[in-house]
Amino acid sequence: MKKPVGAAVLAMALASGSVIANSAERRAPAPVELLFGSDKLQRVDVWAGPSKGAPLVVFVHGGGWKRGDKSMMKGSAKLSHWQEQGYAVASVNYRLVPDATVEQQAQDVADAVALLKREASRLRYDAGRIVLVGHSAGAHLVALVGTDPAYLRKAGLGYSDIDGIIPLDGAAYDVPAQMDENARLMGDTYEQAFGTDPERQKALSPTFHAAAPNAPSFLILHVQRRDGTQQSRGLARALQGAGTQASVEAVDGRGLRGHAEINRKLGEPDYPATALVDRYLAARFGT
Image (cartoon, rainbow, N blue to C red; front, top):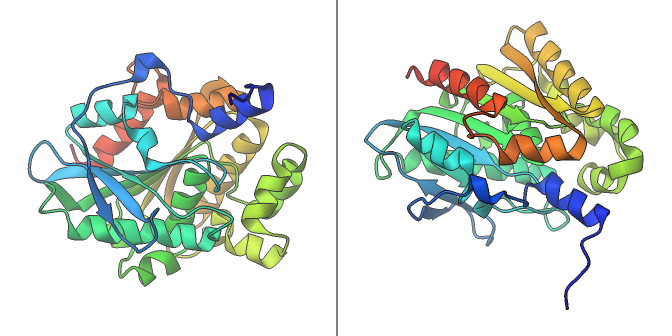
């Protein structure tokens, strides 16, 4: 039986990035699916490089830590655009709340990167040139992996194994502040993900880890949302204060619609974030 699509349902779809415009659809060869754990969600899709030694862009989907899927990459503008740039592309699944914790999700991201490095030769990309990109909840997860070295360390890696981090319109870099800021709209989602213990919330906050060894470079993008803007600027300041190369850029787009657009439109030639990401990737990859 069909369910009505009300404003709340549409907002959730926009936030998770599951609404994809037909204009962004592209044809691409089927990816290779790799397994990095025993759970059905511990999988990553890989579109091999066009030639041996291509750089690798690893994407982590959003969805409030409780929904979303790696298949959202298929048919997207960013996939076809990154392939046109000569990059290999990977799209990571991770276990979802409430069946898994955010700590386990971050570990899934790190474990996926470790597997991708092992498969580099077979799938024609360069294990030494990897940038992580994440949207929404995925932005939080790549930022957490990029600031708390425990996750990569457990996967047998270190920050020398990653060239850069691109969080796209995340808003949970300082979790305790976000619990207060957005309690009315998404308080249940944040409490389900991060609980009520302030110490655990801090432990899952990239901003609180920014003084520790970090990934070498960050490009933090946000649209015009008050919480996302404040959180993105706060993370950039904390990273810069610790001596980490970090820049923060605002992109046109407001509210949940803008939040979805930065994921859906990235890769379209006239979308402003595309050029920002292109320049960053070219600089990090030396292309």
